[in-house]
Length: 359
Image (cartoon, rainbow, N blue to C red; front, side):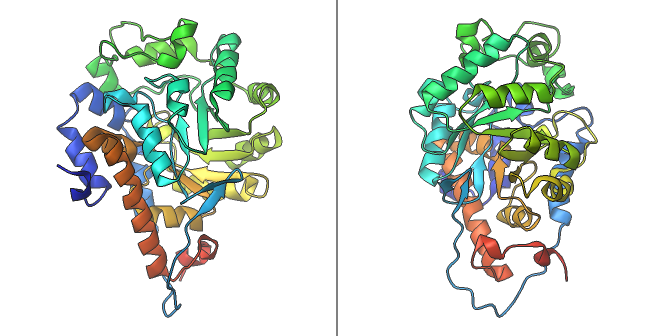
């Protein structure tokens, strides 16, 4: 089936169910424990109402913007997600090419199945690299230096994963990477394979390797160790957001790791206004989690976000139709955002504000 025959993100998600082995689908789809936060991320956007303007004389809409000073064609960026070769053979290279064709930012996960040098060679700009902090600082330093050399234009530090939230789907499935797939960025550093254990191999990998006592001192170290701007991803509170900005973050991502870490954490759209109030004057604010419609993107901007990050929908697109599917997912969201702006009476992103959320 051609990508263009799918009307929306839900169509892609439904099609992905039958195309992926259960362990891979559950890894992509699942959340922590009872998956309350996973569900709430989506449900909370739907509860926000849009009080649209009429008779605004809107014709063309302008949805291009910048992130960290770099132009993007729309405020919809590709979030860092792991193991894209579970979805399609081309993996992260397909995703990078799709983002380039869509004219938006691509963020490569540390836990990619394809080495960063190969991926960034195919990516457009902006191209950013997501970083986990390993217990062995020299591993972290090596990843950072390679990312800079490969052409990364920002470092996205994930701060909400000092350990892995219990993902019961993965434990039941004894999640492992299929034969032939590795954490390719870490292979030269001796950390490229998941351990064989009774439960989730990824959970065991994180316990063995990720720095559990992550602190603002690590953020200080990172900001002083790279010439690239640092984006802090995983913020859930206004006070943490303000401190991260004071410690050198140039942008923040309001995120709960897609509901995959601390279950019963609040939805990202609930948290977003508090982070914007605390740190929006000091750095750019982005948000991810549960965004499945262009109208959700408009709501995020109305709440103060500069852009949104899209994770699972890209994976569903990859699974169904590879690069073309990922590109089509981005184009669906672009079209829906444009439509929502027209129906709300907004010609530019600058006209989208909290007044659209109030009668």
